[in-house]
Amino acid sequence: MLKSGMQPPQAGIADDLTIDADLLQSTKPTLYIGIIGTLVLQEGANFRVAPFAREFINCIRERFRMTFLTRLSETAAREVARLVDAEISYTHHKKGLGKVSGIDFARNFIWIDDAPNSRDLMRLAEERCSAQLITVNGKDGVTRSTLKKVEACLESLASQPI
Image (tube, rainbow, N blue to C red; front, top):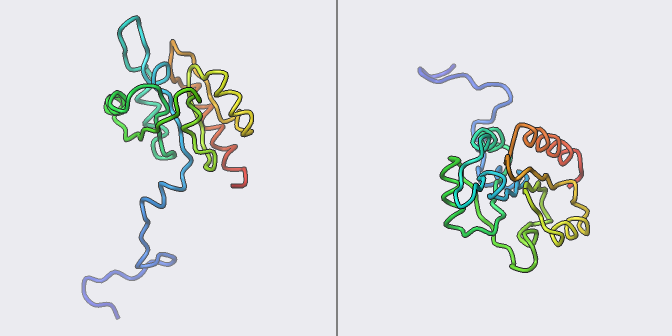
């Protein structure tokens, strides 16, 4: 007999089940994002948010740990995150070693950038991760096509053993 106000337990749901948000976040793949040419477009000396940037972030935010991989300062990166209304971390990379020096190759990841340099491309090839780089046209930034490529790459990552 249930006391007044109590609900019967639901089948399959534990009363003490809690989900640790940090643990859930740590199991997501990392999406490394360049800033200039992907989320922000440069027009001469001026910058503007790419037309599809906010929608792109809204579509992927729940599926990834997003991290900026950029030559911009952390302060500038935080401002871009504010402009696209997202929590995006920032990783440092070693100058002279390319942006990929900021990638954690032990974790599943995808990297979006408009202009990876040859050192970046060689390191990705050495790590057998070239397919995890999605390049975008720096004049358009991220687009619906980019989103489709990210989704396809995410499916590929999910089918690989960790």
